[in-house]
Length: 209
Image (cartoon, rainbow, N blue to C red; front, side, top):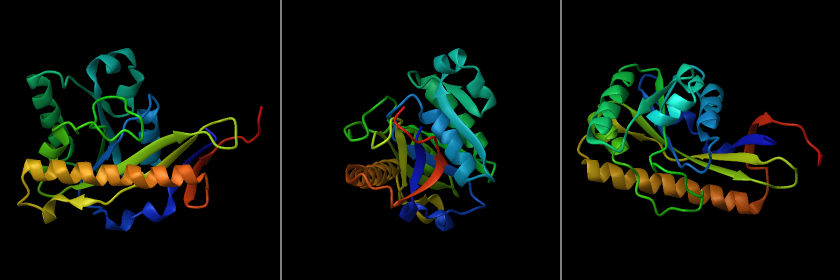
């Protein structure tokens, strides 16, 4: 990558409870997303232990991911969904955990907002008495350099303790809205082709070749 950069104005890290587990949910535009998530966790939340559900078949193919904190799930079955919830809730008993989720359940263009979010995320928020759900928008773009940039925007964090009366449907609607708003914001910045609003977390070599 030429750069991995986060929108400076979206770095609302002070709004995240350091004593509560963190659920970071993102859109899913690329194969690179899991590794970007791992890098962002180290850069933005270095005190938190990284975890992320991944398709069990993919984890079998890429065993190295397991050592990085990924855990296999089979969301195509009822038993797989139940296993995902059980494992994720167990992880969230650690206040210093961060679970990274791509709830669209498929690769999707960054400007494609049509997919419903899979229900597991809303289930976790409804069942968690004290956790923070944080939307994160990702986009990969080519600007002036030969290598792509990874642009990131953080959305509005939601604390489950503040919404004990919300149903799973309420959570689903709000989580979807927050993620899509973050994506729309990032799309505007991407179209603007201006690096000023972003803070570089990783900078690659410059030059055309």
